Length: 349
Image (cartoon, rainbow, N blue to C red; front, side, top):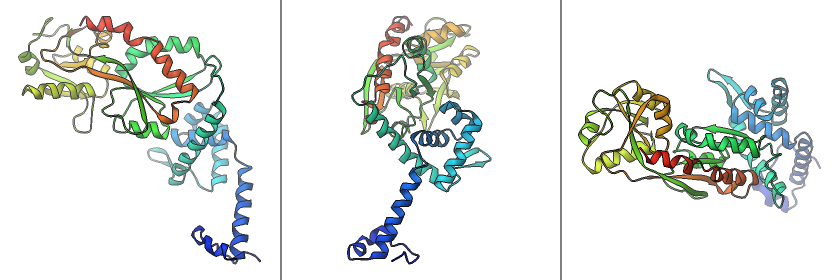
C-alpha cells in the first residue's frame, strides 16, 4: 500500500500503532530518504556550514577553514542543494544568514562538539601539533597586558594554534559562551550564570590618567580637582558601561559627587589618546596604566577617593571544561604570568 499523498504528522503515532499501513510506509520512506541525504554530508562540510553562518562571508569562512575562496563558494552551493535553502543571502549589510541557516548552526555545533569530545576523551593533547581554533573575548586594555606574555608562549608551545580575539559584550557573554561563539572570556563578570565556570586571575586597583602637559595637575590631585575636570569614559552610559567606569561612578555616588563626562569611547587606547592631547582625565585599572603612560606620555595618578579593587577572572562554559585544547589554553593563560609581571610596575602608580 502506498502513501496517499499526505503524510500524517508525528503526533499521529497512535494511528500507526493501530495499523495505519499508509503511515508506516510513508515514515519508512522518509527514513530511507534521510539516510540517503546523509551520504552527501561529512563533518568537514558541517564545519564549513558553521564557518559560513558565523562569519557571514565566503571569504572569511574560507580563511577560517583554510580553503580557497572558490572552494568555499562551491561548498556553499553544495550546502544549499543539500538543505534546499539559500543559507546566506546578500543584503545592503552584506551576507545575512537565513532563519533555516541559524537553526542548522545550532544543530551543527552540537554535533561537532559531541564528535570532537568523543574523539578527544582519553587522548593526550599535543599542543605542538594542534591546529585548534580558539576565540577569546577580551578588551583592548587586557590585550595590552596579556598578549606580550601569552603570545610568545603560544608561538613557542603551540605554533599552529589559531587564536581569534573579539571585544566582549558583557550583556551577551553567557550567550556567546553557551553557543560556542567564544571559548573563553578574560575580564570582569558581574555575576556567574548557570553553566559558567570562572577562576579569578588578579584584582586590579583603579587610577587616573592625565596628560603630562596638563595645565593644572602635576603629580598629585585632590577630589575638587578631579570633580572640576572633564572626563573621558569608556562604554555607553545606559547599556554597556565598562566595569571600571561603573566602579568609579558608584564610589563617587557614595560620597555624593559626580563626574562631568565630556567624551565617550569604546577602547582604552582611544581614551588614553584623548587624555594625552587634552586637559581631560580618564580612569583606568592600575596594572595596565603604565603601558599607556609610556607610549603616550601620561601622568598616572592616585585617585583621591576609595574605589574597591575589581576582580578580573577567566570565564568559560561547562561545554569546554574538559575539552583538551580549551583546557590547555586556560592553563597557558595562567602560566604566562602576565599579571604578576606587570603588577609591580602598576603598583608604583
